[in-house]
Image (cartoon, rainbow, N blue to C red; front, top):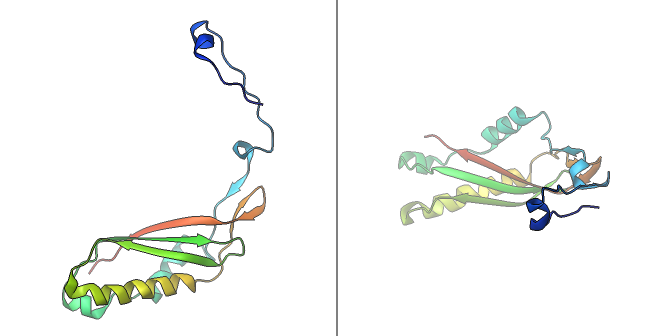
Length: 135
């Protein structure tokens, strides 16, 4: 049970007591999700499977920072992949659309992750990965 401290208690110099139950989230053992082989293996996987489009390289178009947000399900599969980037110009819109579609496919086909866990129980986890492609 948790007791809120009222303004009158503060003025009188009283402190509130807080009791937490051992099964609350504050006491939970949390484990982050893990890509098979770790972070470096994930970056190798991404670098191997996602290639910067030659047409954009020829135009010397810099994509700028991008973010990939995805859900790691309790079974370790990746779903709901979303890619955000800065707005593109009309002359590269089609190439960027193809590039983003490829990124979504690569992430969706990732090997199964070790899911995030709370107190040993697998949970869904929203992962956000910022990155930038250098040309």
